[in-house]
Image (cartoon, rainbow, N blue to C red):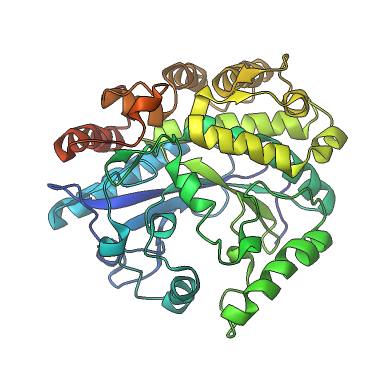
Length: 421
């Protein structure tokens, strides 16, 4: 089967937590959801243009394109339809889907239940080596974007573009401001936990921002080879010796010819998710086509400064101040310093001017989202927090107050609306 070239197909995956409808606490019944549609417990079931599958833990279900979609247009409606199907199944069980990238009060040490069925030996190996009863493994829901390539040349161009855009993605998509009922001072707690969840074997995630490697043979030798060597003493059976071990923010899947971007928090509804996907893909198109900067310059930007921007955006979201001249030049921003939110507004206008947004209504929706701020910021606003006030960091909230906000978010997921708290 011939492979798809740059931007000839799109894979999108949305992860949602399953909660008890009354209490909103995590509800580990994903195997029962899949059994309800497949007639038996399976790890994945075909639903036409989409598929549903399990994840590491029993309270997270993934909805994904069933193979590469030819275009992004219309995917939000497909995902929305399947969200409602799953909520209908869950209604009889007393459950519901809850959006955002982290459950706001989950205690992972007490509530984690690993998937016990197919692939459980792999999950068991992860648990034995890294300890999966923690937020970085059992309480993080994301949107994955998969983009294809056919050759080393295409891989290099796409990887360079993704490396450059990746650091500011949390400033677009952060939706995880609370951990165990507290505001930690970070907009994107999911990524803070994610970047530390494999610290026992540091080469597995690196700095999350990928290294400047632009050829498959070099990547397999310098990145994958090092990971496999480092984990071998802890994984003598070789269960994790696979591309999926790679936990960088963007991981090449050479076996299927694609790169998977993993740093986007899942939003409050498929409409919001697919709008952010469309904007991100639009910017990547402009980068790959050298409309914002040339490929040689993109490839020369170092990992350390990109990682610094990434950490600032994890902390401050759209309010993070970016001061790196090389990054600004690479992303095509006409200035030396700007808040990340300003950069995204500029990029939206560039993408819109080039006509690469798949749906006409998405420009208005994205303007609305960007002027509102990240979903994390809007959640905090609904809780009465002004994010710039350091005195409010690590503030705990009454459970009832948090429940009220997250019930509204669950309703947004069911109806396909944007959250304006």
